[in-house]
Length: 433
Image (cartoon, rainbow, N blue to C red; front, side, top):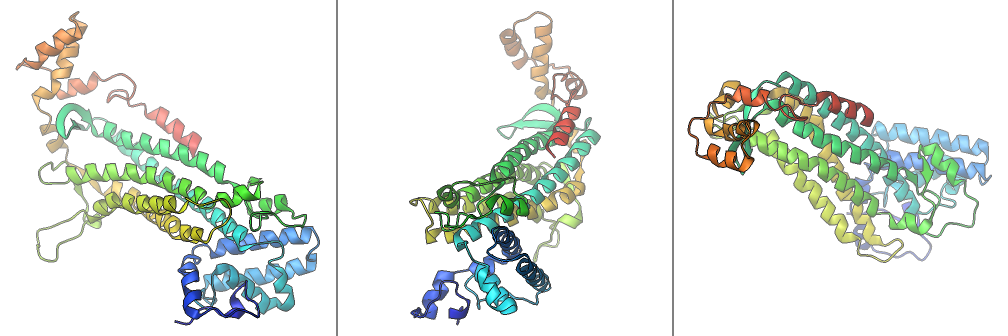
């Protein structure tokens, strides 16, 4: 396949004689991957041009010409009238090609004082900033679905398990709120990460700055960054590292989803039969007419493997000396794929929660008398017996009289079934959103 040519390669010169095969290898999947970054690249290009106008490399009139051209490019790209394809080495070259085609010699000024190194850092940072913001809203939506569901099921009994063996009575509310609070932790971590990554690398060029008084603070403000990433070497060394931080945050979220999905998978089996799933979220079998399979739950469970794979891909890239290395080109795909998997998963979770059908009678029936042994022991403690003596007595007591309902009513310490702490969790969500 013939790919980009000298007219669309930013580093071309009269001595360029590279074969199509080598060019294609160097470009890799950049054009396809840059489709996820292209609008952010346009945004970063505009901020760079605003900075160039501030230091009078271009005039205000020329800046408006650039704005008109970039607006047209954005509209054409969204409408699929401008296609990012293998005519171009990457999205960066496509933007300069379009500007030069539209504005002639003026378009060739767009890259003044900028390297593709800080250009890709900038559009990737904008991508992360925006996508994490969208993901945050999705996580909030899941927590907002869990909290009222827990309140609705505060008296719905279910067995609690350790080692996958029946342990003590609990409620559906306690189980659901466990995941809600896990996600609140993830949300707090996400907020800290978004603050850390909210820094503009634009203006660091190839990693050494440029002999121009670039208006870096103005460019950062134009893009909505709260600060500038000051040192150019630091900016270059952050490529891959910041993506890795992002993917680690996604892995925490997907780890909680995996555990929740595992629980659902078990509780939906005929052997447990605690939870049903509406037909909107099940599939059938191509050979067994009787099957209703929770495929969506299983794929949510598997989603963590995609994110963890992305973490490992980038981790293995970072054994490099300081400064830009072409290896880092391969950090795009895992970031984009990991983000896509996480957002798709969290986008489906509120609907999945609505589709759950709790089989209250089955869950209550699974709470058997021996599960009240701890309650019996603590009842003896209240009467003055030492816990260890009460423990041994209750272990051999075959006449446990405490009911599951009484067991739940007695769990009054904060977080227990009779004192869920819902208002505390709601307040924490309000502070984090």
